Length: 266
Length: 304
Image (cartoon, rainbow over all chains, first blue to last red; front, side):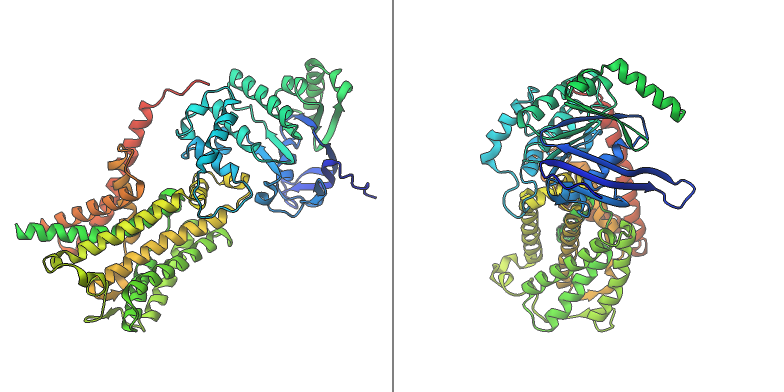
């Protein structure tokens, strides 16, 4: 019945079922027997219309949304029953809202120190390890945003793009198995979103992090990543990688996208 | 002149004692953004515990520390109700506040006022005895100031530790705490324990000053604590070197001064609680007004 687990895969989702508002008039059946595997070092872009299940997919992986039935493995670990904050020690996540990835009243240095201690004990030792400051500076320099000279200012006074870049850096600072990008450029202006996307690509390549990116930007989906998934009504309608993916350009995607949308009536 | 000095001493004494509670309210309200009503129950808890212990012959300093621990336990119950049983923040506080009434009566064995005159307190034993003769009139101010400074320093140090930084992060952005693989609920419980521990410690010192415990003395403590924190932070906001804990204590002293002035001007005691509510209302309104004006000045957003 279920296919044997291959522990070379980072993510294995098997027979996922999810229905919202079960038993009420607003019942929405989203996933019926949904399956997905993601290989190590793969950079997957996911596109799809509103309500296609992209964000629910991410929430299921992170543990924000519980599934009705099915199995979720991260490498060989069964994470299906794990709480969201426990899963976070293997999964990094950058949100659409730049305010969610950092603490606005804490300084850049304090934010980085907290993230640096991810998954460890938060005891009564000094919150900011002064010996690590040089390391944080070199990490910030990689962003080319001049943040290395501003480590003592509160993150709340940075722009959305700067905050998102910092959130990206913070979520990839400690070793993780999977990076989840939840429309992380959608709330930014075109120029900032371009900068953050380039930065994302660089960090993901440099550290060869397995990445799952949901985006509304079809151009990003085509230009970045090595696997492309288009979702509709809880199913993957397109799932291509490598050379097959290169055959798609934006106009093809847009055409399929429109066809799906018309079927849905929106 | 003597009247004036006496009044000033009185304001400082009370302001510093309630300042300890205000620092606790700062932790729960300003750091965690938790409107914690259980303070109304934990301040008299500190009084009653201290009275019972001192009557039982316990060292007053130890009694104060045990009072803090009892307050912390009550605070963690508020946190538990909210975090683990999913009861709203306001209701969790009300539940603990209501329950404390019976707990306090049980501790005082049913009497509303439990006096313990002629017993040792932190003001007439131990270090207090070592003070020079001339400082006798000011012994309460000196000891209360020392207590407030100790609490302030401990809190300041704690907020700089990893745990303290995480506490601030949870109050700011719960999702961030989850992202760094930490349980935000645990930190909320710790924060509320600290907040109510401070309130109970203030109650303990207050009761040793009056050498009695009064289970009715909790009414209006939340209002007073909040007003102190808001007054302190809005007046001292511009001076960046003043720590928020100091602001809370200063706020409590200013608040007490306002009440004292009103009483001197002939306000009947019955109107005291009304005045407390009015002061908090004014502080809240002016704080909103001030921060609105400030937001308008800062429209320039930094470029990427």
